[in-house]
Length: 316
Ligand SMILES: [Zn+2]
Ligand SMILES: [Zn+2]
Image 1 (cartoon, protein in one colour):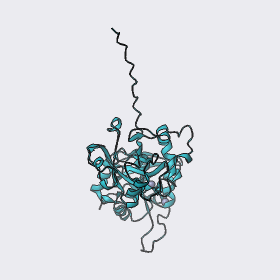
Image 2 (image 1 turned 180 degrees about the vertical axis):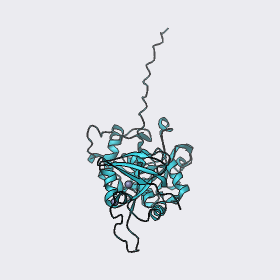
Image 3 (image 1 turned 120 degrees about the vertical axis):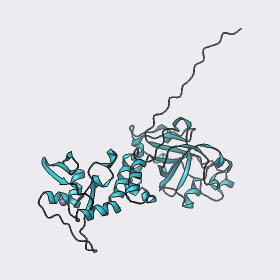
Image 4 (image 1 turned 90 degrees about the vertical axis):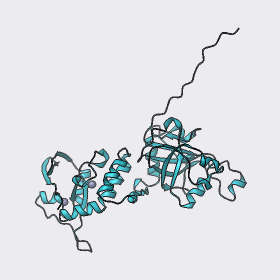
């Protein structure tokens, strides 16, 4: 009779989530080329069980296509895809047990009907014609991501944020990502909603949310309240008006005093806005500026070591 040998279990170490994801796409099972060509931008991507609780709205990811093993018949005249990155996507919500969408792009339509952990995503950069080929992706040791480059069996894996940053550089920067915050209207209620929705968003996304709000109707209302003046110029005793626009209004920008990237409740709301000229806006972002006081009725800044107070303008 044999003695039972102790069993050595190779334990899978869970890869730590990073707020960035690689989604692995097998074009033989799911026709990403047809999906992108259709102009659809929303989808649900199956995720690995390991990480099903780690997905949050406002995270970002890439769709990585592995070796395209479609038969000639399956290709039906289409070009075989090279191994590479074919899209940048935004995660819209947590992963839930649900069915897929867009049956028509699955090789086996039944796959779309299966209840699986899936995450809703939106394509914010489509690269079907200009994919980033893995063989050309030159990552430094810090940027390297084994799963992105070598592939793996599962459907999703945390992505090295530095690799993501590099990819965004290659596709001409985060400004070119096509976010769509318009789905909610830019009023107070939806700002509160955006704030909640994007609480865990990665910095690039938070910044875009805040720019969207700075340009929206809330900001417009606040500009009216401050009379289209630069509140910093005014506090310095300078002419607070910039040039006039064709519609006769003075040009002015709005700024979030508490950076939205440090998102705290309320940081997107009107109490966190001041109006500033283009030059002071740049200075607030890039100059030697600290917020030293934030009370009910004023902000106090230290700008080049000089104290400056800006009154909070309350609603009419
Ligand atoms: Zn100014
Ligand atoms: Zn700003």
